Amino acid sequence: MTVPNNLISGLIKEEEFAEVPENLVLMAHDVYKIYQTGEIETVALRGVSFQIFQGEIVAVVGPSGSGKTTLVNLLGGTLRPSAGQVYWSNIKQDIAKLDDRTITNARRGFIGFVFQVDNLLHHLTAQQNVELSARIAGLPKTWREKRSTELLEAVGLKHRTKHIPAKLSGGERQRVAIASALMNNPALILADEPTGDLDLINAEEILDLFKELNEQYGTAFLIVTHSQLIASKARRTLELRDGIISGTHDAGVHLKQLERTRVLEVDNQDRLPLPENILRELGHPRRFQVQVDEGRIVLTPSIIEDAVAVEVRLVTCRICGKLVASNRVTCPNCGTAL
Ligand SMILES: Nc1ncnc2c1ncn2[C@@H]1O[C@H](COP(=O)(O)OP(=O)(O)O)[C@@H](O)[C@H]1O
Ligand SMILES: [Mg+2]
Image (cartoon, rainbow, N blue to C red):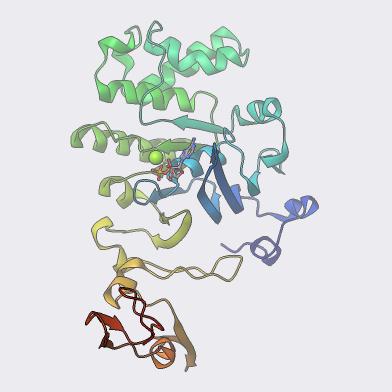
């Protein structure tokens, strides 16, 4: 699948959104997010670009603090980027500049959220929770009942429709949350560590369910995860590190051996993130010489720094006898000129 060149490089103009591929669901383009807390600025995302296509399952992995939750909230329009664009295919627009109300209306029926901590209303039954978003949207009761029954059946909770969340297990609550996210038949489900609180068996069930829903409804999924299980079901995995996409992987990723399948992508600003493990292995060099060798780019840690470094020895101060670096003009101990 190729994306027109004008979408890959440079800022996208509104009229060019008309040219995006038919099956594109969502696109982030050079997205930055800076949080301001009093005097302190945290750059959570520093230029993230990627696309999600219809029916794709995309996993996002990365250490804590790498910007995963920020990314999910930006894509879902509950947070605004500091710079960059978030394109939603349903309205064929960059949502970053739309007002909250327009975004909320556009989100309904386009994006469903599944959070790590379930956000079910404790006084409503499973079925009422599932129906809630459609009720808010003003959809007719008969339609709501039919759809929520069908979804609760799809997530294997036909026998639990009248239970309140307190009477359901963690896995069951998560399934209610998934059914809720699907109520308005979204093109995309955004899930932030959906199985984080669950044991392995539940996690596996939830994943099979995602896969089934993906096949049945053609829903695309973007799932933030630390779970090998989830990642193994993804068609693509994005690695986040310090707010940038530091690598991508095709299907069949192993989270403990990311270096085996990692593909580096030059971003819109011609930046290429170097894998942390390789830098560590080389002793964290900061400068490289770059050569092209038969179509390969060869990076050699630069030795220029060593060549220009001033040789520093230790000498003894003739007055106080302290050992002093030879590049000092005066002795830091007694002030004698060296
Ligand atoms: N509301 C916020 N205000 C200030 N800093 C934040 C806020 N949310 C997240 N951050 C910071 O942004 C960075 C990315 O956070 P987050 O997106 O939650 O990462 P992850 O989900 O990968 O753990 C972290 O350094 C975090 O401390
Ligand atoms: Mg997070």
